[in-house]
Length: 170
Image (cartoon, rainbow, N blue to C red; front, side):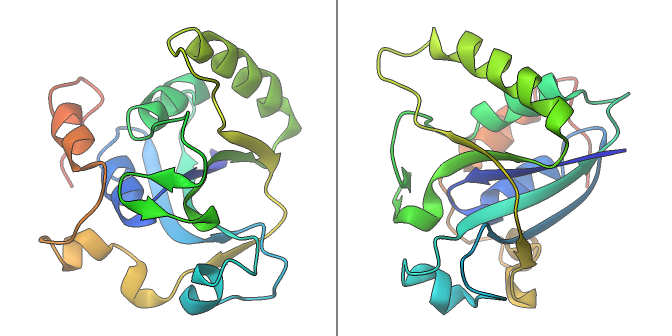
């Protein structure tokens, strides 16, 4: 089993998407790389924590290798917008790939190099080691399951996922 963290704007939609990907064993939304211990949602939204809204992903690399995780990640973001995804604006909504295992870094960098050829603008998705992660408040966990009418920038990506062999029912 492997773990990675992904920052893709609104963590609600990222979680809803990745829960539907084969090989994903667990997800949790939270705040990553904060300079404040155990920040609240309000703290993170202030922009003073340096935290990113992130999705923790535990996965079976034999079913869903990291390259395929990254493929799905890029289906959910615009990697050329800084501190913004859809209508969500702020440093906490920046896109990022946050690794734990140093062995993942060459895979991530190779993938970004290939992905960058698809865009005329520079990819600004940050790649960093995950230094700390604080789970978000309980009401944020599985938010779109609890609130199916909730907004998120990537709802179209979830519909597109259903058309692929990587889709699983939740």
